[in-house]
Amino acid sequence: MNTSTIKTIIAEYRVALALLGIMLLGAALRFADIGTESLWVDEIYSFRQAIKSVEQIIANAPADVHPPVYYVLLHAWTLLFGTTEIGLRSFSAVCGLAAIPLMYLLGCEIASKRVGLYAALLLALSHFHIHYSQETRSYSYLVLVVVLGMLAFVRYLRYFEEETSPSISWKTLAFYFAATVLVLYSHFFALFVIVAQNALVASFLFTRRAMFKRIWKSWFTLQALLLLVFTPWLNVLYWQIKAVKSGFWIEPSNIFTLGETLIEYAGSISSAMVLFPLCILAYLQVRKRLVRYDDADSSNASNQTHDDTAQSALVVQFWSGYRSQMLLLWLTMPILIPYLMSEFSTPIYYVKYTIPALPALLLLAAKGMDAFDTNVRWMRWLVGGIIAALCLIAWRDNRNDWNSLEKEVWKESTRFLNSTAARNDAVFVHEWYCKYNCEYYNQRPDLTFQALPPERFAITPTTIERFYAPLATGRDRIWLVLSHRGAQTPMILARIERDFVMTLDTIFPSRYRKYMIADTFPQKTKGIYLMKTYLSNDIRVMRFERKK
Image 1 (cartoon, one colour):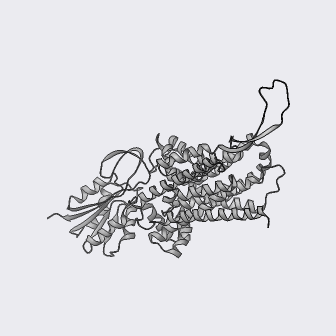
Image 2 (cartoon, helix red, strand yellow; image 1 turned 30 degrees about the horizontal axis):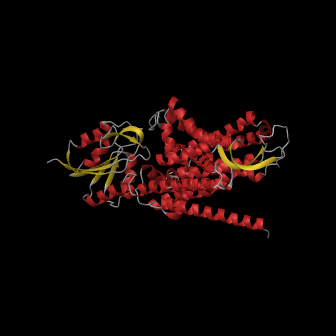
Image 3 (spheres, rainbow, N blue to C red; image 1 turned 60 degrees about the vertical axis):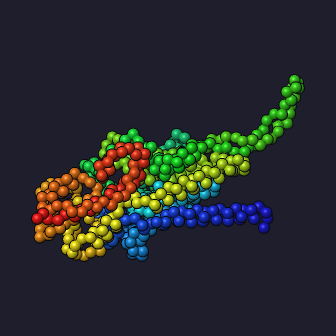
């Protein structure tokens, strides 16, 4: 075994150990404190879907706004690990962890092993990704399948780079096809990643015409097959889009929306101050190169031919090629398309929905970290300082989350009801979806929970009377649970106060952060905040006793 082979083996072991360390770090950040906070309303919705049979999940899919694959997988997961907070959320944590080695492979395909390690580290530390890896929703699964799909896409394109490239293998075609089907059936916003892929291939007609001639037949065939596979969902998608246009809960986007999105991706403003310059540096490479020049003697006026002399110097090079274009399209399409749709049509833009673009930002930042030549001492120290800063910022941001409540505290408020309510007391919940949170945590079978119907029913005093009267009849005491304060809240209170008087009012607060937006808190206090990350509401538990 020669020296070069030994060095190669040692280098491979170092990469494997580094990736293992990054995955251990990512696992620690994703599983730490995962079961402390209550399941909030969207997580309870996931729970209610997961406990159904596979047939029921698929049949219910048209009533949701996303494909059913995630819920089917969550259903299988709960059969093994249960429906506790940890059992439900651990599926997202595992998906988030599995995306880390895929980011490494994608970074290797796009640039180098070093970029792959940087990208894996940035995803492991990503506060935005960690948050949704600890939530029983589809977002970490969405990142996983999008990274997998883009990995398959890059490997597919690699076969068409050179005119003398070998014929593409059926395994590569099958890999791209299967991965893209997962992307299509993962989330509505994942479709914009497919749009970005098609935009890149279409750009080859102008920038890489020879490559376009080699690829277009294969690409058109694949896209036609994917459309055929997605056809069963197109009708559902049509009616979902029509329902959204008729009215949706998302607020209109504003001037701060795009900046808010990028700061969320970074995790915090301090992290953004490190990551965004790196994204710019992704297109600039500072490397030591052998520069040749004429070592002419200025004092010698005669024309003499001198040998070229090589000298090591720092040279700035620009990173070009379709991979750089791909990252830009991947980053911008899932953000700009829904943003423009929200501006000129029905608002659909919500930051967490755009999470398919997050890996593109982190890959650009990873490429920016690789812009410096680590063979140069000061550059090596600079890269080390960047990594240390990002680790410290990630630790601070995640520690702040561990030390505070950012989800609605349904566990604590329902336990309070269980310990305080008298036997056979009734609980009126102001929103139908909040009722399921109370029932999930309720341990008192004698307590009766009632709620108003879904939003598609007109909430009028008559509607309130219909659902309130059976609870109030024959009881000297009832409870009211308020959260997500809405227009019907004053009507509910006015009706109850005709028969009862409030004797207890307990508030269970949670954090409510926003980015650069004026907002009204549940307690009616107003303020302008720099952050808009996780919207949660205080829960108000009120006891009423019948008037004498």
